Image (tube, rainbow, N blue to C red; front, side, top):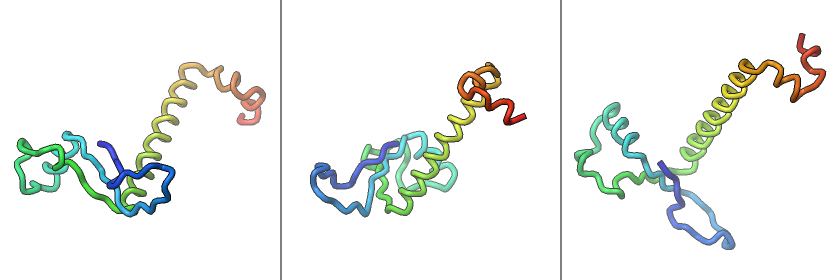
Length: 102
C-alpha cells in the first residue's frame, strides 16, 4: 500500500497534518476481509477509492515504527548471513575488533 497526505500542500507552506491516507494493497485488503470479516462490499467489486483508509497520526506512527523495525531486522539478518558466508568480512570492516570479542 501507499500512504499519501489527505490534502497535499507544497512543502514551502507550513502545514499541520492530522490525518493521512493509507492505500491498501488489494492482497492486504483480501487478507483483512478473510481474517476480520467482510467490509460490506464484495471484494471483487471494490473501486480504487475503496482501498483508501484515513488514519490518524497515532496509527501512522505505529505503522511507521513497525515498518522501520521490519527494515532494521531484515538488514540485520542480511548482515548476519553475509558474515556467515564470509567470516573475514568483519575483520576487514573492523580491524582488531575480533580479538576484543573473543
